[in-house]
Amino acid sequence: MMLERAIVIGSGAGGLVAARELQKKYMVTIIEEGGPFYPYTSGIGLMEGLKKTGMFFSEKQLKVINPAIRVLKTRPDGIVVIKGVGLGGSTPLSTGCFVRMDDELKRLGLDLDIELNELLNEIPISTQNEKQWRPITRKMFDICNEMDLNPQPLPRMANGLLCRQCGQCMFGCPFGAKWDTRHFLPYANALGAKLVNWCRVEEIKIEDGRAIGVIAKSGWSKKFFPADLVILAAGGLGTPIILKNSGIEMEPSLYINPIQCVAAEIKDSFQVNEVQIPFVVQKEFFQIAPYFDYVSFFFNSRWKYKARNIVSLMVQILDSQEGEVTEKGINKALGKNESNRLKEGISLGMEILKKMGVEEEKIFTGTLTAWTPGGMMALDEKSIKELHLPQLPENVYITDATILPRSLSNFPLFTIMALAKRIAKICLNKII
Ligand SMILES: Cc1cc2nc3c(=O)[nH]c(=O)nc-3n(C[C@H](O)[C@H](O)[C@H](O)COP(=O)(O)OP(=O)(O)OC[C@H]3O[C@@H](n4cnc5c(N)ncnc54)[C@H](O)[C@@H]3O)c2cc1C
Ligand code: SF4
Image 1 (cartoon, protein in one colour):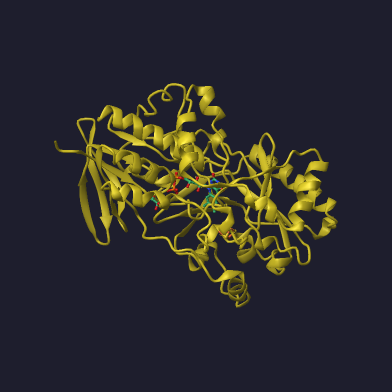
Image 2: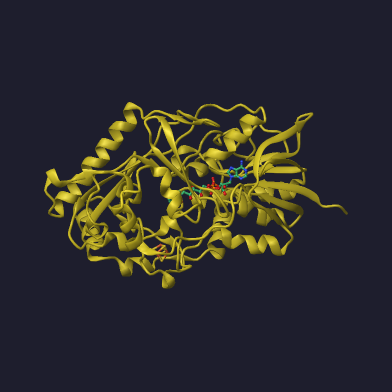
């Protein structure tokens, strides 16, 4: 019997998880815009040296440190949005914080316990890093406790014993400690899945309401890949563009969850040499966590101190769902509510720093950034059962952050992977 052909677009969180599942019954081809991922291995010393030469002037130059990093800037506010392009998508850049955030899906009627438990059996989860916290982090944690902020240490998707606390999670792990979805590729390959690198899907070809394949560009040439099933996993910024090119309209409901850091000089604190986001304080509309902000360190003139002497807290807000991504870029304005949430978070961060002995005048803020875009076609009560959006042809599914409701979007990785697993199972049972 001829196997049905499935095309998976993108090899990030939602892509490789789905590919691996689908390979059980489909002939899977994963089409990936980028190439293999290599971590940056040279350490902060070299980066600081490069910074001193004055060669860093635009955030887009983060590519110099790791070519898998892509930076887009929102209009009109110029928020720096970071994503990964290449094998593993944004997951090799992620700080690897493992947070289960599926309450909203449960409320909508979806129980992902089985998939989440399956993932927990496959992915190493470590709580080891708490034992390795630097004194500065322990002090911040204790202060947050004294302030009744209920700080929570964060487990990581990592082999904690291999972690050397280099603090470079967002440039890829040079010691192989951090887990990312590239680990699923050999399993998918072993079952026959094929990976096509350096190939950008432009549109889904639809005939009589069904997808018949995708058109992709590789170098100068275009190629048609026939398919019986298309899985869109090009990420919260990639999938909407493919949908638009395919004539499928969406609401302008993009969230990005902006981040701003609040920081100070504290001599020999060495926060830079520690795993990023060791703990988090969750508030209703924002979260706050220790986080050395490389974007501000390289490109923001207020961050003029040596890396080892900077202590920084990130404030990440829950965003509005107003905005869109197009081929030309991201249109997204920071609304009044979001500005107020940021202000509230920053002033809490300042309180924490002041309790650590920093004078208020010496506190400085960082550049507005973001790295959890999604929501352009979020799941709702109607689509939660089938996990299929009615705007899509019946043989097209989305398994990335595009379908994630906003309230789950602060640490979305684990939920995206569980959703991708469930959707792949639905496709396996149906053989569409
Ligand atoms: C610096 C950073 C730190 C983060 N830290 C955490 C964390 O600690 N915890 C957490 O839960 N989340 C974290 N995240 C977020 C998390 O990594 C993302 O939310 C998640 O990877 C999104 O998964 P996705 O499948 O939607 O997209 P991605 O993982 O981004 O994958 C999309 C893939 O599609 C490919 N692609 C795009 N367009 C096309 C096209 N047209 N054709 C072919 N391929 C295409 C891309 O190259 C990419 O491989 C972090 C992200 C970043 C950038
Ligand atoms: S801090 Fe640990 S997990 Fe992060 S990159 Fe360094 S060794 Fe890897």
